[in-house]
Length: 212
Length: 385
Image 1 (cartoon, helix red, strand yellow):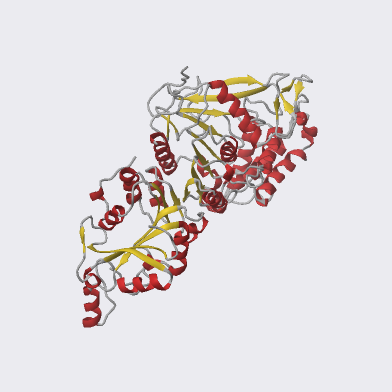
Image 2: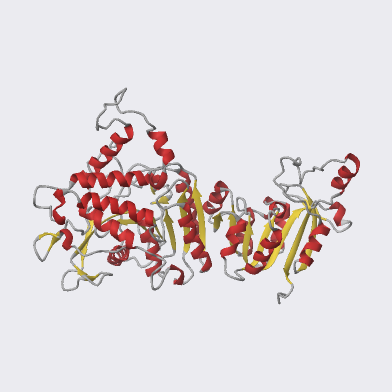
């Protein structure tokens, strides 16, 4: 029923949406109020499912006609059969996950490909803050103080590349973007991405996968 | 054929009437799950809204153990002061289950005493009420009588089947038995099977009835004595399980009823005692003790996980919306999550939401916009698909 225009969803979600082929089966982890799923269902004929911890947001998704489970994503992903989805999306959540390697293994089991996005901790504003002020950095993407942040880890684009390789994934595609936390506009960063991107979006798959 | 009942002011379904369908007349009696035959069977039911030309907008509402077919609207002669149907906040024009769009049916369950055949009905073999000669019925048998009713109404596809508590068990049983009839299912505040806790409370309720000397082995109907005390105590126990610690603290606390000090006796000093006694005696006026025995037994026997063809063997295609309540300790959220897990493993399309509410198991009967919005949006998605 809900069919938001692509420009009405967050820029990073617009980029993610553009990566998904029509008709795919998609699981969106931490799907919020379901903007991405609703857009994918309306515009890409995607068979979507979502998991959202927040009860009110999950209820809003269901009331939009989306298939969404209210619960903890770390636990909920365990119960799907192998290869249930073409894409599993973990958007802006990895920095809050307690056991990233374990979660990614689960995601690679239930999905052919996994799309992971996270705020880039090697953005130049962060590097400079640490270098010049010697204090834990804050910016629009990571606005918290060290003592009140929900983010239990910080990740750079380079960190994730190494992590993906170390735990056995092939990076199918990497997109660096420059956008704000809730912004509908932004741009893809090609030049000096490690310094200039506020977010990284990676498509990964298991190395032994025969996916195209 | 268009079936229509009910008219009236917007936001209320208005005046409704209870109707009856009789089937399974001998020798074509219905074979129950236990193998026993039963007939004739009368099913009391009500409908709201209009069946579409394509007959694709029918919704079956399954009621809870002590409920009836009167889910919405008022009977002729009832005024605005009379209580409307038990799910009136959810069923009606423009409501969560929108009777401007959907044709809604609710039937009294087999074994009950609200118009459908049960232990208080006349046994054609003796000309007297069945009593304990009434055969043991199951949730599956209840569903079967609902199916016969739908066949009679010319409905071969259900947009959804929805119900809370024992009604939710019927929802699950519908999905198991008739996956090709059911397009979507909304089990609310329910479970795939009773826990020991749930069976224990049902057993206390049954024992309260059977220990009442007026029960007389179940053959009390024409003796002028009924097991009212036992039935009232059974209802008191039930009521405690439908509430929650928090709801009872908020509603009663340790407040005294119409007095400032203890009576130093066994009168209803506390408000909670007075409330339970009131609920007990109110229930006695409308419900049959033997029906309670039969229906609680059917609920205890129900086990979706032990069936030869459990719910997950139903072909994918049913869209599920599972709803639980945070303070329900009769069928706690973990049991709803077990159901969700099972459906997920079977590759079924399932949504789940726990609603934050302190009213305990009974929360699904209390007007709540969140439930209306959830169901309304979910149904809209099904109807549009």
